[in-house]
Length: 264
Image (cartoon, rainbow, N blue to C red):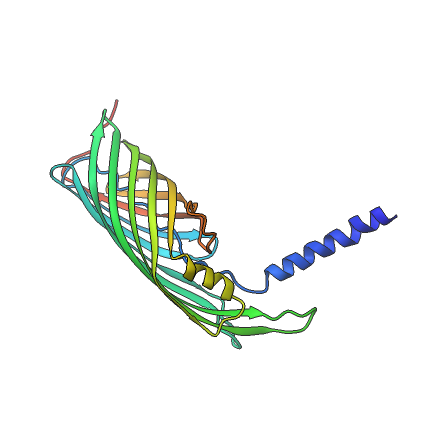
């Protein structure tokens, strides 16, 4: 009888308490991996522009990437990302807003008739602002309470390589990016619920991430459908509130002087 009561009441009750406690605040993350720089250049004179929406566990955003191929197998480009979240109601505010911009440059080459290899390095900067609230849940009582604000800036240096193919209407690639994140400013005020995670971020301002990603494109130039998945595990062991998975999808507009070689 005791065994049945445990199964029927105790375990579901415990799971309910855990669920409620986890729902006491909206999640805020302080790093989101942006779109990888995978223009898949094949020859000089090519221009690639991507506009995409990106989504992860918390922060929806808009992203844009532009790159162009120069003589000597050199390519240059830039990425822009902006987004955030807003859970505010009439009696409290809870939101995040962030912007990120980076420039990159590097080397591209083709092999065989459809293979492409690229290597890029880049530098970026981010600014973000957070306003927090939490639910002061007390066994049926309580309500939402303001919990201060935070502002932060970080710089990022990365090096990335990718290998892929462009064949007729299909392009695909695997990329690996090593990123160094350095928070140059972390400021917060009047926060209680978020204090531990913000103090941990302030004490561990530099993090390393090893980020693999997969890119898939289909269509006919100058317009292709674009889909990319990015994983972002932190390898420095800081255990910070970062986003570790993201995907973006949109349109890739590609222009160039020559048509892509195809295999019959």
